[in-house]
Length: 305
Ligand code: PMP
Image (cartoon, rainbow, N blue to C red; front, top):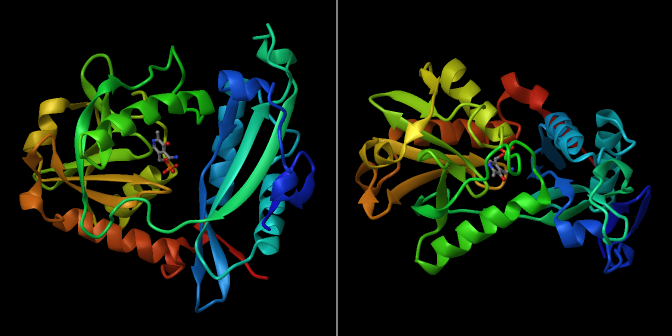
């Protein structure tokens, strides 16, 4: 039975239960993170990727929703390290912190006066999308949630209804992922990934002021493209029709890692193969997260038994 961290204690997962009337369950008032830890056989350790940065973003999300836990970034990292040690297995792990409104959901929408709960749990996690062959995606009929509706820049549980509707529509239509437009028709991101396109050797990705989550993988990939591959990266809004004309498209995220997109709305991208820039940055990313890129070791927290 895995251990979870639940409101100040490490307890068996089957004892970490919330009442049926919990506010977050009714109204989607929770903030979460998704962190990966890769098992390294060479080091016999789990290598947690950018844990500090994930917890910094966690607290930023919590600030918007007023679900800030008592624990600091350092304390959250310390708790997570202990939790990984308790659940240590020689496999890749996904770590899920959740800060949520724990009061009873009856006639109370004042976030300021609602009690917060905190849970952190881990699950075994392999590939999320097909990073080897690439995926087929469609442009969703659902639009991305705007900042003045539910801020996409925060990982708010209720906001993921938007992702669930879009992903379900795509899967039912035979695609593997959905790409969101905003209400002006610009391309925002996937349901759990940021998007990059390649045009004439230049890489383009939507800016932070668009309705996107400011992904940690996005920042990592931008660094690799610029500093290690010497490629120009431009942050600007992307039109829908550009998707059909680009040389390469890839999506990135903690779960999705670097996943090539080889078809969008029936248009074949890059002859249905993985483009050169996508392949190069994907290789570097995998090397980095597995601890084999000394220059970026600072992004990794090594957890041993
Ligand atoms: N966009 C959305 C909507 C997401 O849920 C995620 C996954 N957290 C991402 C982008 C990628 O963010 P990150 O690289 O920090 O995982």
